[in-house]
Length: 338
Ligand code: ACO
Image 1 (cartoon, rainbow, N blue to C red):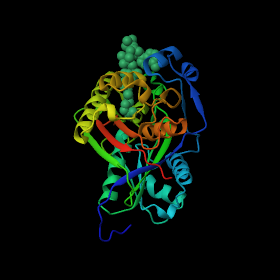
Image 2 (cartoon, helix red, strand yellow):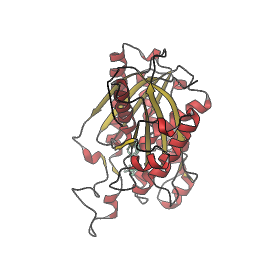
Image 3 (cartoon, rainbow, N blue to C red):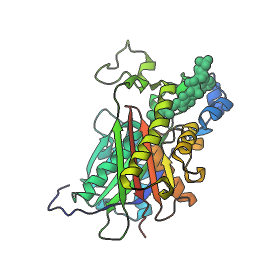
Image 4 (cartoon, protein in one colour):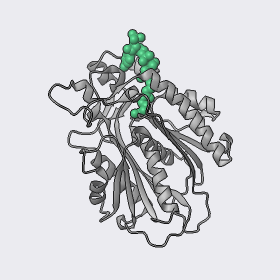
């Protein structure tokens, strides 16, 4: 990527692609693995089943499938993509990052490509980055992917976490409006609070505690203080949405669809009630997909498009939250290519 003279313009959200692995794991299977029940999981989380990557699939495989779906649906040549951002917390390797590999896998020769880690908020941060680059005139077209293979860092003996998380990938196109009428990507609310990293983390495997023979397996997997994360999630969903709407000079009545991180049905119910958005405007697919971290928002967006809930021109409020703690909200009009 090389940037010449720059012309400010609006960025638009024009396409979405998705991929989930074939293998479906039901709550009944988890009943055999840990001391849990289908009733408990359904009542406390809303999850019935989730998709789990095959043994030979890694995050780049999921991401590349979502990107191919996006390029097919939008009729875009890989060579027309200037920037590829992959939001993930489960890369194939410590390095290289996933993005250059996925660029090559999908035919985007020489594309500018990098990974971004803001855990479950990563996709929102990626959309903000892409929008900023497009609107600054540095690039014309970006693909932003959220992809995670959380099954590889789940402790399958920990009933408090193994019932929640899953695998998948989603991708969106952010591109310059070329003067076409439309609202484009309206605004963002991004933030973080790093004061309680242990509320949701993988303690070992980084530079503070490298994986050595003495490190317990549980420390190489997701550990979570569920009640604290629940409290944070319900609060931040409401606060971040309200801040963004206020900045944009809009009210919740202007919003056609809320696509929030698919972590827990009770979090979404609680937050949407406090935000004051009717249930029929809230997208939920966690019953079938579980919590796919950075993939959850684009996967929910893709499903809303497929089921007709996401109408052309709809104003969509997307809200992500997760480990860090981090959060990110994006307000964008859905303006698919004709
Ligand atoms: N099956 C049966 N019982 C269980 C299970 C299970 N799978 N998991 C926990 N329990 C038990 C606990 O041990 C506890 O038992 P105790 O009372 O004897 O100690 C009891 O159920 C209640 O536990 P809580 O943690 O209070 O249960 P809660 O109603 O809070 O639900 C849950 C737990 C679902 C994890 C909830 O706290 C939650 O959803 N938190 C937010 C999690 C989240 O969203 N994380 C991800 C966000 S960011 C990201 O995606 C990376």
